[in-house]
Image (tube, rainbow, N blue to C red; front, top):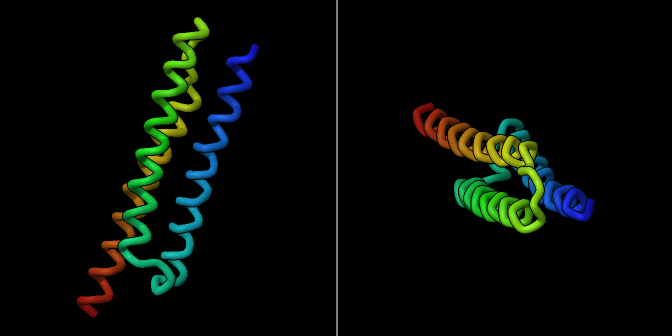
Length: 101
């Protein structure tokens, strides 16, 4: 039962990154001058790296405590990966459209 509590605490990291990536996505869609390429790329890179390490740690915990893996955390990591790539795509699409106008 202790392992399940650890999964819940580690899922909060995934959820925090998902919320932050959605906020950045909404900000850059509404007002593109509030975020720049550095902000979007660093946030995306940090969220992917930390979430990947978090997923590895969950795997080690599951192995040490003889538990099953956590499928939800894997899906949350894939959502973070998709949102990060989508944020970068939207930023560079908006940047290229403002340059050509």
